[in-house]
Image 1 (spheres, rainbow, N blue to C red):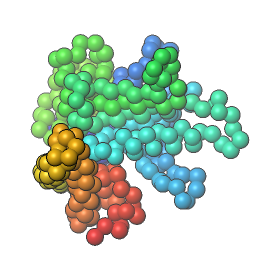
Image 2 (cartoon, rainbow, N blue to C red):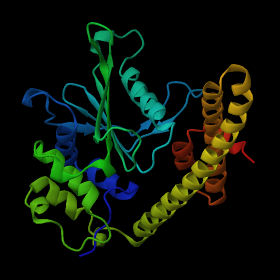
Image 3 (cartoon, rainbow, N blue to C red):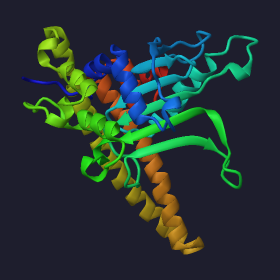
Length: 311
């Protein structure tokens, strides 16, 4: 038996965007609910395309979007590579889903929370943990939370089942995402013993997909590989440029105002300039390979108009 990776766009949407029981199990395992009374028992799928109220505003698409009986919305996304713009895109999409609940003249008290669950197949933080939970919190004294938006980011490469003994379903689902791919010939018994995970595994069988879908699957990984190489090359060049500019500026400013402060300022400025240049180079490289516009926008954080204007 040959399996496909659950992290690909095709398979991820098939598993969690077409089977309500699976996305319910997945969300209950991954989200920070406190007790059975908060857990999800039923969902309806919503249009993953977050269409703006006016044609002048930005349109966006998420992987999976659904709503439970009380009206809470859940956005689930798989992100293959981390970019500096990704958090802003997540905030944008969740905020759009939140405000779209309210019709003109509606009561703000009718608004229900939006949970944004983001699986990232990359690392982006200095923390040793893989699970990152964001809320809007008063920092100084009360620690009071403004309810409405909740963001969960999971760094898949940092997950290790050997170090986490509690939250059994969370561990099983993360093992499903990180252990199964094209090289898998036999799925671990402890995964197949769970009904939800076992069903999710069957959705990955190569025989369940058409030839056209398999071609699209292979193209997806080709695009991911291209993006990774471009990002790696651009980041390396940006680091080298930042260090060179930082040293030069540091020496110049150091003679007048202090070497350390000047060097740090130069490095920071150089890194930011290098980052922008790397995103431009990556966008151009992806355009030359005829990568779909939405993927280029997701990878770089640029708008469609900005990408069209690149030369």
